[in-house]
Amino acid sequence: MRRTLVLILALMAPSVVNAQATFDECGTFVADSSGFYDCLLLVGDTLPGPYQLTVAVGGVYVAGDTVHVTGSINTLFPTFCWDPVGQIDVTLIEPCIANPPIAECGMLVEGPMGCTLFMTDTLDTYELENLDGFAPGTQVFVDGLIDATCATACGSTSGCIFGNTIEACPADFVRGDTNNDGGTDIADIIFLLASLFESGAPAPACKDAADMNDDGGLDISDAISGLSALFSGGSIPAPIGACGADPTADTLDCQAGNCP
Ligand SMILES: [Ca+2]
Ligand SMILES: [Ca+2]
Ligand SMILES: [Ca+2]
Image (tube, rainbow, N blue to C red):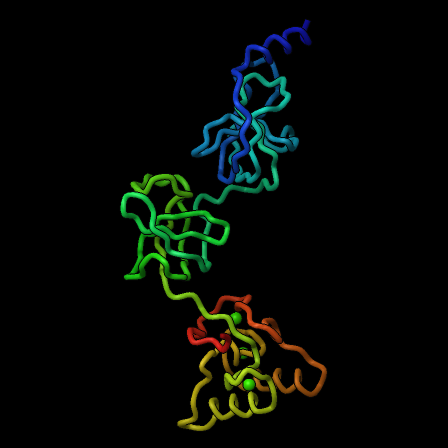
């Protein structure tokens, strides 16, 4: 009897066209509205669903819990739950942080309605609170908080970034090339020591390149790390040997870089 009822309910469920779309937002678990089953479904903040998840959530979560889920939405899927409009093939499920931070480089692009949007490497687009004179087509570093549910006049976006600062993206560089001549040798150590201790000596064009221990500051320990890497089998943090971005954010300036 129960099996028959399941089949009937499944047949009565709204038919939908299969489509693959991305789900990447916070949502809230709700109980199946039929009251017959123990299906725990997810209602997204902007994608109302409800959605069935491909991972077991019973016993882990209860109705009312909020989570951040990423995955792809499949609208053709077997189910005995009453009312899901899609199934999320889950790649990540984690606690929901209401306003996750963002601090990364991306591109300013022209959006609809005359808006300028910030597009990340993963093609998410956000309205910014502060453009500070930067124009579309510019690579910029944005540091702020994400509001994925903001009301925006900029059409379909991934949300808004608020409380943000915006500045030019740090240039790629090779760590250790303190004198900016394309190579890494004892001359870089001498250049660094001179910049630290000789008045009037030029500063490194890319201070990140001179931060050989990548601790966010420039001092004698960087020269020691560089000497160790050159002569004592030590190593310094990436990027070394090829141009790359600083893996650790800091306040050191590298707008000039030492790469083409
Ligand atoms: Ca050099
Ligand atoms: Ca340092
Ligand atoms: Ca750094």
